[in-house]
Length: 334
Image (tube, rainbow, N blue to C red; front, top):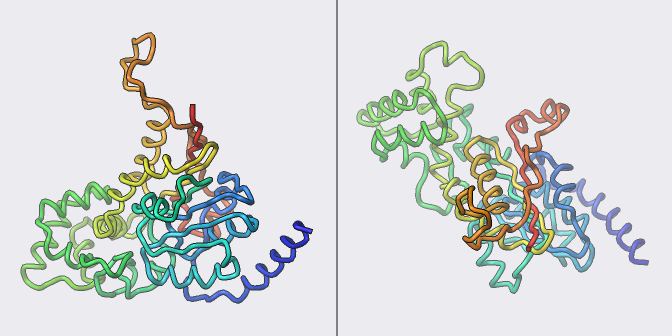
């Protein structure tokens, strides 16, 4: 009877999925790989810290039974609205929260949830945010400089571009964007803003182009890509948030729980990799010590010694998946 009921619900889910709003389009990256590695239990508790268009979330919820529970976080009001709409069929087992995932542990504790069976983060900017010109994320559209994932926060990309000292802009563009022409770009931003405030993405792209040699402008990828990435990361404090949340998320996992993180640039990936390694082997004793005396115990094991990458078919079907890397950590308590 339970199997029949679940099957009926699955058919209902399939029909309702066709009625989804198309305003928040986002192709879920590494979907099957995430589902496989979360190792979903029908009665488990699962958390998505970056709901976006709810693509991963929808498939997770489909695999939960009546006793299962799903909690989703996002700081983007429009993502929250669309997620509630798309996941409405699972109303009895979902909880959608407008908040940055850095507050996950605190919020779950307030709801009486001490441990969960799986957590997913799909980092970076969503396809919807990139395609919505007015959000100011894209270097391909001329729009106001914004780049806020949470539009209630006070600092915008415009504030960063027009207020930060030249040395700080150089550091951000070089560190977060890994842009070799960071110093030239920052210098020209400051020169232009002394003449007139920089207000649009189009003007910023123009400055970036003028700061680079012709060969670099005509190379692989858009010349503004790295700088826009850097400003977006600074605007949303993305690396600080990830750094603060990693240990909390590992601690939230129950025995055999999984943490799956999809990153899209080397800074995030390196941070995730190092955090997972430290959680697996936290010992700080000198290597020549015969036994561990620091007392730090392993929290589990790294499932992915090398990151899982999109298949060739996925990369061809979704160009935005090309830089995606999935890393997985499994909680195992000693």
